Image 1 (cartoon, rainbow, N blue to C red):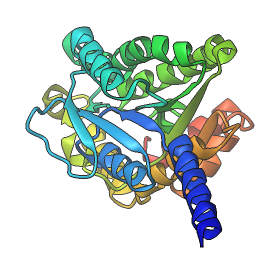
Image 2: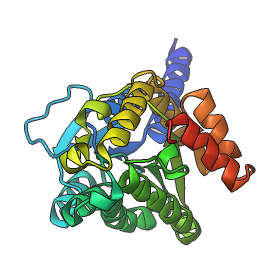
Image 3: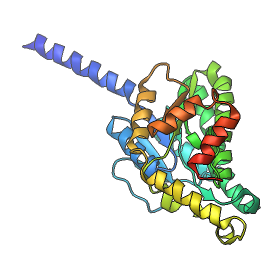
Amino acid sequence: MLSLLIVFLNQFINLLFWYMKSSKVILITGASSGIGKISADMLAKSGNKVYGTSRKSDYVNTTIQMLKMDITDRGSIEQVVLEIINREGRIDVLVNNAGTGISGALELTSHDEAMQQLNTNFLGMHQVCQSVLPYMRREGKGMIINISSIAGMIAVPYQGFYSASKFAIEGYSEALAMEVYPFGIKVCLIEPGDMKTDFTTNRSISETTNQDVAYKEYFRRIMRIIERSEQNGSDPSLVGQTLIKLIQMRNPPFRSIIGPTAQVVFAHLRHLLPTRLRQYMIKKNYKIE
């Protein structure tokens, strides 16, 4: 009887050790809606300790621990990161997901609109990386997963600054992956195509473009195509599934392109197609004549 109890305790301890080792402390930005919320919930349900961030101080999520953070405010970022470190002692995985969208003609985009897009989608992500990396280097391990977009590989008309911010994430992530490799830190990109989320309704629309005599007809027609494609897009849980797989892998791929099949195939083939043919196909898709 005693020997059976000892065997059971050993198995229990081994299982507990395995669980503690496999469970990750994860920080995911923009976790109050859309892809971020769904992914955070999925990561928590798969056995990880997940901290999500939102600009809303009153946002509540019973699955994960939510913290108020503005990714355009360095002090806000550092306060949240330090709070997690004080609670957990480490951050194993950072998922940079927070982002916003602004639609309008590049010619008519104001400086404030452009900076809002770049500060949120790109420079904010950079500031979060800067705040988390010292603790990952101290541990000699860690993973940073940046949520980019197929629009960061193939520019989308009237989404110019959104695409620019995602193109910036691509280059940034490639450089960062090489810089932090000696410290045992992995960097990955997830590049979703169109997903069925509330991103469509939350996107800011440039009224200047919407009323402009030269642009408004093209703008309204192309935005209808973009919104219809998003509404018929992939299930956003695909991002959560991809995150779980990457986190569990010893040697995860740097780039994961996911979403509607046609978009994924086109993204993979983009460098193989002649530039003129690629541009022709994009124009045909958006009915640019």
